Image (tube, rainbow, N blue to C red; front, side):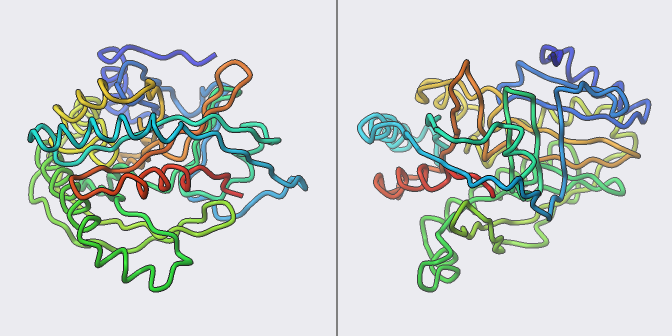
Length: 321
């Protein structure tokens, strides 16, 4: 069994391991109440991870997936609550998420092995994620983040032009870029946006999705690794899966969502040789007893369409094989 630490213990351990330049894996839950950090050469057999997976392992098994999303009326109630908060000026963008029970003939381990995704994490018989989204990357004393915000079915006519010219999606993405730029300013200097609103193509089961990303970077001060825990604490939760302003929006999420997020929308990553790569834990499935739940959601703004946001939540439920 993995040993999770409290927020203060976990971030302290992360800074300690980084100060010793020990290669290690870390996992931070969305609310930061559960933190795991362990040297790579001492990892539990209950955990597996992969970065930049490009090849699918074929287990010779045809995947079956049945979705049981939350009822539309349940989603509508939470959606309307968010819109009310936006109208009051308490939030401008909020990432509203739900968990949906799913049925599949694959185990979490089989999903992990077969998934093609840039960032994969497996906790044996508990949790799997196959995330397309980088959280932060640190190289040569520079920190980078790549917020993803804006999704469209790639098969739609002129999908790329539609998503890039959509005013609601553009405003949502711009708000997240501003938020993440401000976040990097808290831990670094000379913050810039080298790439703004570029397209990533994501395989989503039997369809492809286009997602819009940006690149933001900043310089880190000398000795940053000695306070890596503090840096990660200040940057989490990720802006792309919370909203803006972050603190008030996180409070509204706590009051509005129907289930605790747990590890979903937290982060995980690797520190090694004064560098770091990490991911946001989206595209995630958790196991509770004998039941499997897929976690998904999307950003809500004043211009959001209820039916379209509900459909996006459903479209994001897929097996990446």
